[in-house]
Length: 73
Image (tube, rainbow, N blue to C red; front, side):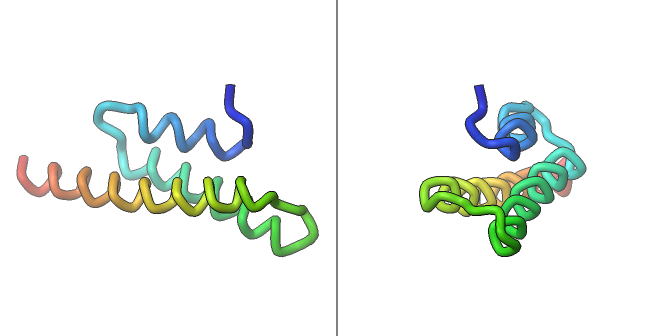
């Protein structure tokens, strides 16, 4: 079970064998929305903040790999 709401779309993107850019983008949007909430009075723990930043970095890498595969096919 996911501890944070943004983890469901993140997991969907990371676990999909051939994720679409839309699936990756949906996950990025969910994470960015949560980080934005933390700036407007919805507290975020240091653990969640670091997990969200790590997830965004993983999605950036995934996005590059997906684009590379698209160009090579």
